[in-house]
Amino acid sequence: MTASQKILTLITPEKSSILTSETLSELATTLKTTTGTTTDAPIWLAEAVAVDLPLTSNAGELEETAITESLKGWIKDRPIDFAITASDKRRKKLLISDMDSTIIQEECIDEIAFMAGIKPRIAGITERAMRGEIEFDDALRERVGLLKGLETTALETVIKERLNISPGARTLVRTMAANGAYCALVSGGFTFFTDRIAKLTGFHTTQANQLEIKDDKLTGNVIPPILGSAAKKHALESYLTEKGLEAESSLAVGDGANDLEMIRIAGLGVAYRAKPIVAAEAKAAVTHTDLTSLLYMQGYRKSEFIET
Image 1 (cartoon, rainbow, N blue to C red):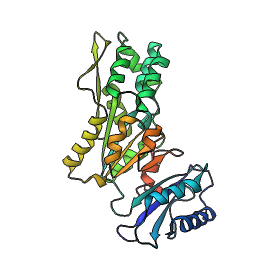
Image 2 (spheres, rainbow, N blue to C red):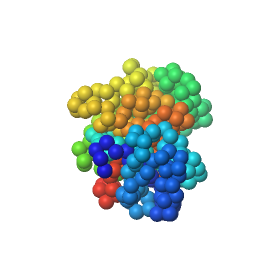
Image 3 (cartoon, helix red, strand yellow):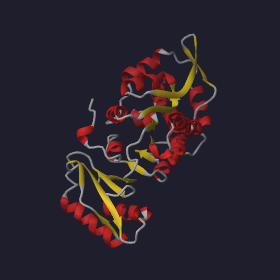
Image 4 (cartoon, rainbow, N blue to C red):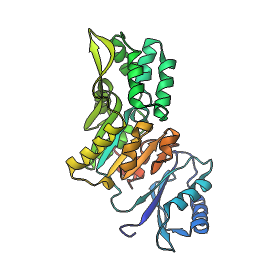
């Protein structure tokens, strides 16, 4: 393949039995008919699970929008995630990831609210903020204010009993780190959790908000400044400068509206089981599979994964 050739990566859940030579032939026919795009021989990254299809257009320039729309029409209800990337600089040198509902399956503040007996009230605010319906900073202040007086032992209980690492998270981080990528966990949540989750998954550094605590109780305040969408974008830009990298060498992943700015500017911006506002703008989306899909999108073979 040429240095700048576009590659279509298809990923499906293991044991789905969807990716076969027959379905790939069907897709090739669809793309040729609808967009004039031809596919080279498939390169299997994991048999029947993930495959690279180098693309060529008879018209010269590939129209990714047309290819994407054709793909979506072909996929329909099939559990297939996909990405279109350039063959050069596929393997990113910077990973910047959201934590809540991305690296972990839960929203930490909602689980703290469970301990306070007000989860439905706070979870509703969280959902609206992640959908971009209300400002993140205001939503964070409101939710933390409702937790005033909660003992810090409740935070320990959340860590021990209520948080789960998302499938594929450790493999994603540790595989990229082992291949020279710098991995940063950036969150609109709290350092109490990010510091520990980072250690469990292998991130090099973290950034998050800090809860104000006095006499082992939450005061209901967040220590300024509040780190939201702009802070995540700034973090990505700062790491790129620090490491001497171009934006194309970065991968950003998240699920909520406060992740959009960093997802927009990253070389590969991925919406992970995301809110509609995020999925609509991200370069790629993971809906049916797990976080190891981000490795396949970079051309890693399953045999290269560092499993944990």
